[in-house]
Length: 216
Image (cartoon, rainbow, N blue to C red; front, side, top):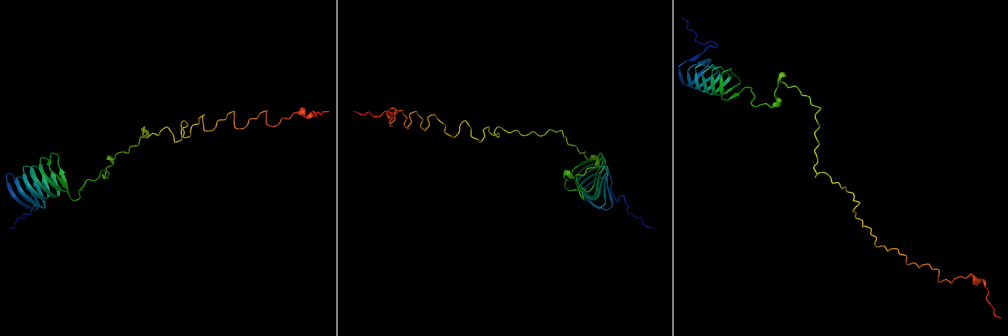
């Protein structure tokens, strides 16, 4: 009689920790493992770890994929493929995985670090790719906008009203006074006045015409 092949088929549960069971320690597995009881410790495997609806798990989990169908998971999870959190579960852990799916009704309290191609830093806002539907339409500038008002000059900056030219009221030239240094012209000047009674002998026409008288 040939022996029965116990190798699990793809997708079949290879190991099961049922309800009401408790396990503390280290679990290493291959394929697919489902836990419905209480587990505390470490789990290592390249396959899929399935957490049932009534399971409680505390510890460190290093697996290929993690499917949390329900129950509660606390600790640290590292999944190389995917982490799925379904409705009704409560996960209080730090996750590290390239893909994360959170179903409606699932509770996740912790941090998640995306790996394997996920950006480690946030991209600048101007480099974010937007879909055509979300691309804002360009707005045309309002040509009726008022021109910016020119800045008013303060009184200190305004130039003085007086120019560089000398004022006509008060100049550097000395003022002319009626009593100047020039000698005043008087009627009695230094030139000799012309008088009818000059030193030249007066010529008498009558005396030239009368001949001298002779005695005799």
